[in-house]
Amino acid sequence: MSETRARVLAALREQRIETASWAFGNSGTRFKVFAQEGVPRNPYEKIADAATVHRFTGVAPTVALHIPWDKVDDYADLAAYAKERGVALGAINANVFQDDDFKLGSVTHPSPAVRAKALAHLVECVDIMDATGSRDLKLWFSDGTNYPGQDNVRARQDRLASALSAVYDRLGDQQRMLLEYKLFEPAFYMTDVPDWGTAYAHCLSLGDRAQVVIDTGHHAPGTNIEFIVAFLLRAGKLGGFDFNSRFYADDDLMVGAADPFQLFRIMCEIVSADALAPAAGIAFMLDQCHNIEPKIQAVIRSVLNVQEATAKALLVDAAALDAAQRAGDVLEANEVLMDAYQTDVRPMLRELRADMGLDPDPVGAFKRSGYLESVTSARVGGSAAGWGA
Ligand code: LRH
Ligand code: MN
Ligand code: MN
Image (tube, rainbow, N blue to C red):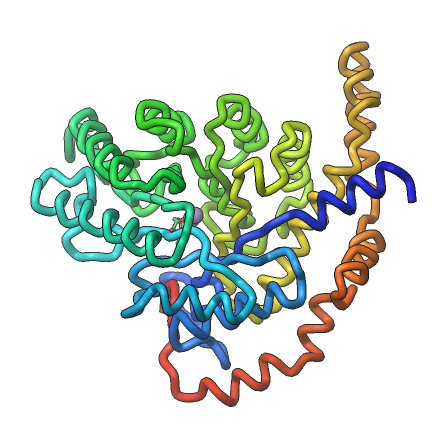
């Protein structure tokens, strides 16, 4: 085996992709939620589905929770159940966007009482992390305004900074805060954390364990996301990704569906900064909803899409690229990148899986396994759990 191939296979074997509990629940748009058969009725069943994804892919050993969607009485018990199933609990996603009190904002709300309520939820999420052993607290704020003049923008930034700092102080030594930004929605005039620059500035003043998370669906059309990746990596402020794919706004489709080339370009920045291995501390998470497609199969497909983009990024001839860049050879440099992108990495990934004791075809193996049929008969009569349900 060539040295390159061995290096690429070793890196792919080490790669970790985190699934999201809410991807397994019924979901939809504000127009309609189409219920599917066999969806989990509770957080335990979502974890069972996530464990199934890991069983067939071998690279998805953690699953993120969203609180209170995944509220249980005993989080240590949930973590023990996950472990029994061969996975661990990952990031804890806070939810300060679905309570009537948060109509005008959560931590940026003009009322101190509402802000205190929001902060209490964020602190509760850190308590949950203590019980689950999770490293990352993921914060996304729907806070913003719909009309010019509705609230004082600078005062809202002050309120945000003070809440973030209270939560940061509550974190344990091994815990991190990942701050997610989003251009718009649900607020349509002004969002309090609209972009990476705002998230970065807050994280910078908080400290080392506050980092930015990039949700690939949260930008204006045409935004060069890989530039943001490069910038934040250089600054040591990239905490992770919420991967998904979009054609229009925050579509939450399967990562790599609309633009596999963009996913490749993002992974190229990761690989060239040597930030792929888990030790580098970047969390590669999925944040998706599978409204019309079979959910577990879609999550498996998504994991494979990330894996394929990563394999291609790992195949970039770094020495040739560097030489072309230094020589100012524009077209040669571009061709080096495109050569890697055009490579069919599927045979190599099949080989990797066989080597890992997995079926080379995870989607086919899942379909043949009868898992969906068995949970469908076992989960009859349950209420759907998850986003948009
Ligand atoms: C907001 C978001 C955020 C939420 C998730 C359900 O659009 O990306 O990460 O927690 O969706
Ligand atoms: Mn997200
Ligand atoms: Mn989103």
